View 1 (cartoon, rainbow, N blue to C red):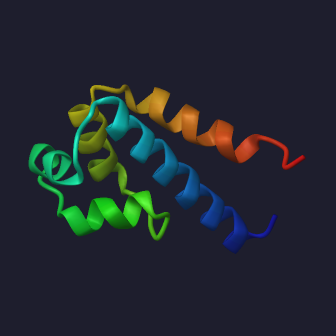
View 2 (cartoon, helix red, strand yellow):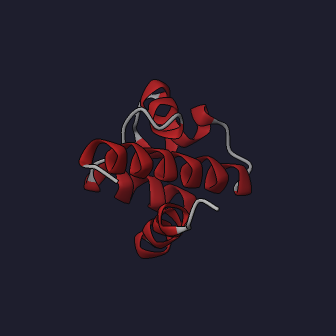
View 3 (spheres, rainbow, N blue to C red):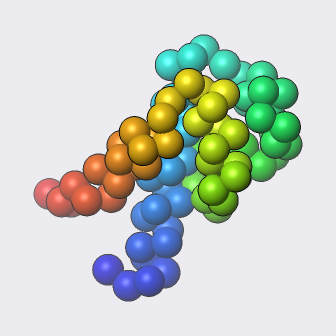
Length: 85
C-alpha cells in the first residue's frame, strides 16, 4: 500500500470508529460538536474519511465520547491491519 492509499485507509478507519463511537453514545453530530467545540462540518468530514483529526481534536473527541485515546486509535488501526480477504 502506498502513502496515499495508507492515508486514505487511515482517514476511513478513523471516520468509521468516530461514527461508531458517537452512535454508541447516542449523540448527534451537533451534540458532539457542542461537547468538543468543533464544527459539525468538521466532524462530518472526519466521519466521511475526508480528513483525520489532529491530536488536539482527537483528544477533545475522545474526551467527549468518554473513550481513552489509545483505545480509539487501536480500534481504528485494527480496521486498517485486517487483511482484505
